[in-house]
Image 1: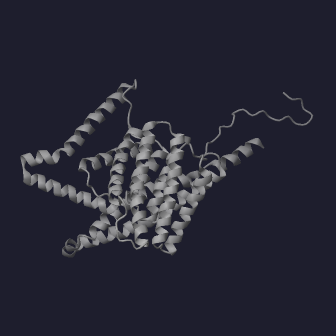
Image 2 (image 1 turned 90 degrees about the vertical axis):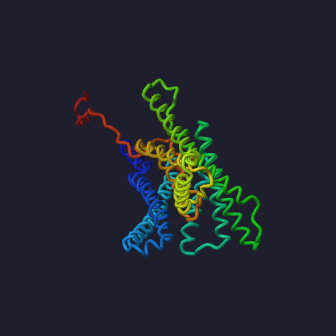
Image 3 (image 1 turned 180 degrees about the vertical axis):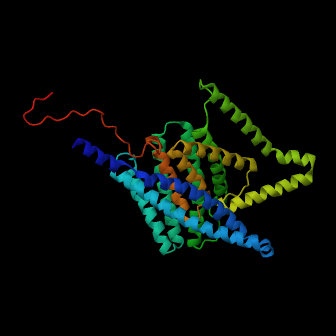
Length: 371
């Protein structure tokens, strides 16, 4: 009877394979949606002359746009699915309970309901303002919960920087929409400065990700780890400095070459601006460093099953300009995954098979002596 009760309790507290494979599918779908829909397909809209000249280019961009739109819908559905499973697990079990769940769960449920409702009834300016304020409130509670449960200052500093960065976009969007709702033609106070500062903090946060979750300590006694960390620091620092001063050195050698390289960098920046909302006003080396640190950390954490890897991946793949509602949900989901990361890896959160003892005493038949 006790064993049966334990099995039933274990099934209830088990998030199941649906959560695990749904989360993995969401990470890949979000990545390919970013590449094929927000980057490549939008790039095709500005290459009309090339598409008219070459039929294969037109067909290729149309195919990628269709595939990207399918991935967009798939990503949104998976976000709803994973958020739903996560909220249910928080209400039914003690495995992922947080200190602010009494506030976070209703607010996240309300945000999901607003997102679904806006699909059928597109929001006006007032609806957009309410949605952004609600998202900001959820992020505040998730940030406080993260700071309470995580003691490392590197992790606190990284998440705090990300919060301030994404708040820059929410402030820009909310204040601009509010002024439009009130028919005020003047620009909101410091709206452009806060937007630029938010972008810089987002880039800084993507670099700090490596320090918080992906770096190797130099004070470790493991010589191979110390050697690997030193090699990574020297090589990465050298490439960063090369990219940072590349334009200056090329201008000394050949101004024409420096101009061509500068145009190529602006083209790459323009593509990412269309997809992720960055304006690329910072030196190009900072964006490359942020992308490299983020990619390395996410791959490292995902390979060992850490929920933090999936959370960090979703947070930064959503981009800076959260122009689509499911991107806001991705940021919320990412922070929720970061908060429950210390409860165990993705493999440990699966159902644990309890080993039964090899020897089980045989119950005596009635009337026979007990051994």
